[in-house]
Structure formats: structure tokens, C-alpha cells
Image 1 (cartoon, rainbow, N blue to C red):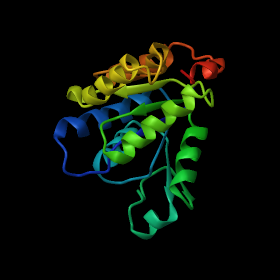
Image 2: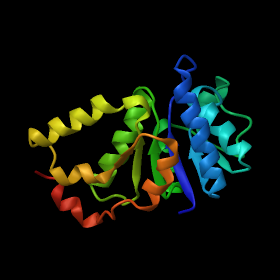
Image 3: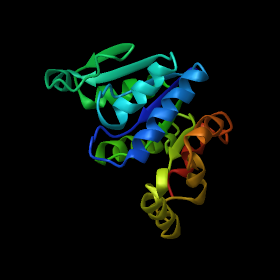
Image 4: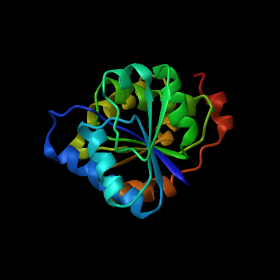
Length: 192
């Protein structure tokens, strides 16, 4: 594993504990010499993540659409910035550049990125580990919804094995490195 995609919020209105986990995860990834690929935001959890990576002397690559650069939403402190044209290109580039994916707390965009990478995994388009950092139970409602999807036969129980949930930043890297292997042939299980 060389690069880890991290999906997280740009909101600057969240509780300190979310910032703390983002910063700490950035430090830990840098300490393990794992490059970080993210959405290139300079505020909110994105900014905290980037500051943590840089404090740990790590490398952080931001991928951002031109319209966001035009708004001034990019992070000039990122080690490297890749400017793309669309959100679709951004998501594909981040996924392509990563060997594992981590979702921190976030809003609609973060949820959408997490669910898209799980959809791609369900369809056998990648087999990369996916870890959810469930700070203070932030993702409990989503995890309950996934349980309901299984109970109501919209997805199979095996699809809950596509990701690992941890509650501390310190547990993210072990979860990435020890994730259950995912066979792309499980594509056949996508249809229920």
C-alpha cells in the first residue's frame, strides 16, 4: 500500500473531535510513509487532515475541479495538486491513485464518495480496502441503514464485509492493512 484516499468534510462548523481525528489520521499516515490523496480542500476536516500529513512530513495530493479552484477552495499547502474538469473526474482520479480508502465524518459529498466506492467494490470494479472512521458514532445511522438493506434483501450479508468500521484514528491503518481480501468475482453476488 502506497497511497490512501481520504474522504472528509470541508465544513468549518463541526465539533473539535472531528478535527482532532482528521489531523491525527494525517499524522499517522505520514508516519507510515503512506501518501494521502484527497479533495484538496484547505478548510474543515480536509484542512486538518492536510495539516496533519504535512506536520508528519508526509505527502498529500489534492484532486480538485477547476470550478473549485476558481472559487478559491483549493489548498495551496498540498504537496501536489491535480486540477480536473468535473466532479466525476475528481472521484475517479482519487480512486485510481489510491490503494485503500478511508471515510471520515462528512456531509453529502463524503457520503456519496463512500457509497460510490462501495458500489464499485460490490460490482467488482476494485478490491481495495475501505475503512470507515466512525468518530463518536457519526456513521451509526448509515450502518443501521446498511443492516436494513441486508434484512430487506436489497444487498447480501457478504456486502457488509466490503468495509471495516473503526472508532479511533489509530485503528485505521491496521484496518487497511488487515482488511479481508475482496474477490472481484463477487460481482456475481451484486444481483440478489
